[in-house]
Each structure stands twice: as structure tokens, then as C-alpha cells.
Length: 116
Image (cartoon, rainbow, N blue to C red):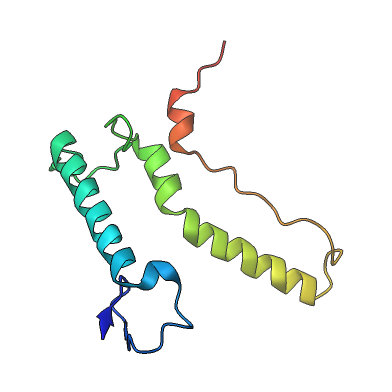
């Protein structure tokens, strides 16, 4: 049995159905890549901050509360919009082919936008 990255195991006797990266060499390469990434994370101390605030990973800026709340609530808002979209199409309130509404949420990119 060979342990896979996902934690699953398969019998190595029949590799006709497996991808070449799922073999021993692929797993070894993946493990080495993970070690390299961990080494770089430790070198740059990306995860050593003791703050509970949301941070921009690329430059370690702390995200303002207004933007952080939009980012952290985006999934829930998206689920709500999809549910409303599906229900309105099934109830024939709107045109079946009309577009889904977009969320005007703030992102980390809006932290750096300036108006002139």
C-alpha cells in the first residue's frame, strides 16, 4: 500500500489506473515540495504573528475591520445570493436567463486604491 497525499491508500500491484504523480516518485517529489515551502515560511516568519487580525499575506499589512468583515462574510453572502437566485427563477419572478446579482464587497485590493 502507498499512502497518498490525501491520506487514502491504494494497492501498488495495479498501477494501470493511477496517474504517474500518484506513484512513489510523485509522492516523494510532493513531500520535498512541502518541505521547501515550510522552510520558506519559517525563513520569512509568515505565520509567526500572534495577532488574531486578518493580514495581507504578501506584505503583512493588517486588514481594516470594514474590509475584513466583507472578506469573512463573503461565502455566506454568496450562498444567500445563489439561494435567492435559484428560488426566484423557480418561482418565475424574474426572467429565467437574467444574471445573478454581484456582491459589491471590499477586498484586500481596495486597501490600496486611491482616488484622485
